[in-house]
Length: 450
Image 1 (cartoon, rainbow, N blue to C red):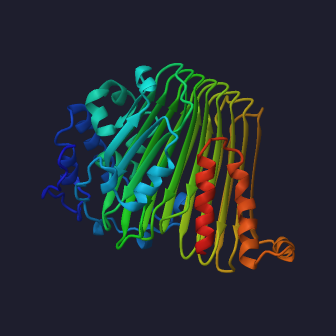
Image 2 (image 1 turned 90 degrees about the vertical axis):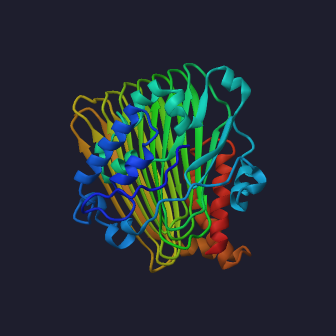
Image 3 (image 1 turned 90 degrees about the horizontal axis):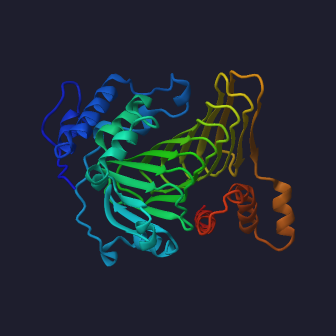
């Protein structure tokens, strides 16, 4: 990896390390096409106002209070090598639990340190590698897809910042007709506090291929405010089947910002699951675009908050072509003074007849001080569609708790069982071996802590 020490170059009116000088340093060893892309992204970033609560999509997340970009440092280059025994204990435990896989990729502080892939998949042309290495190994693939149709810098302030400053990431390319029976498992560990990390993922599934991808980002509690920014581009070509799972388990003081864009072409299936358990503040922007007839996308989400955690999920289902379908289900449980915001929109574009789209958000409040805001919307420009949306916010069912306690469970055991039953509906819709068990264990661990 190229040295990414921060340059002393500064831009008038810009303070901190997130500036044009840093872009120049990060891109110093990039090929010309990538250097041009980064500098264009930085120009877009500078011209794009920082989101405020005056914007509908940011009304409930005040960045002035929750994120101070100028206070963040640039991460030091990790000295950790591809050595299991030298890895942090939390990373070791996660790696040991993820043994059944088509391949693994592990990273520490934004730097990829290990990649492995089953030999038979390598022989079939499957590519799993560091995005830094892919810049030179697969430039044509990256030129076509990286920060282009799915997630260009013009998508927003944070999208532009990530496109300019990513230091490493993941490329997964599955050739035509190749099917992976086991998931690809990614584990990213954050160790440094007070820094800004920018990671990027590009998944391209060629026609008729099949792949499941599980991305887990974790850390201990951090000593200072830390930004973890992820940009994800998933492209399912004709007839491909893709499952993308994000499991976020960062410690306190982390601000987790993720921009995810999925493109589903003709007759493809592109399903997503976002699980938000950690971080002090979480902001996920997910846009699913159904571009060809027969495309389908199930969009699942789980979040479980305690203390003063804040979750903000902003989703959109864009039906561009006719005869497409999508179904969104996001469910969350909130304890103490935690808060969630769900904002979702189904967009049916002109001419997208025979669209079949649903959107549901349900919230369970475990405390009188917890709060959930749910804002589902429809924007329909076609007249032959089936679309609906719904949202609920409710307290823990006292009758269910009483019934379970009458059968010998303690109050805590009864509440845990109710919460698991409430959230379990989402997991039942994801038949992905090993992932459901992992998420269930994570929820149970958090229930024991609250």
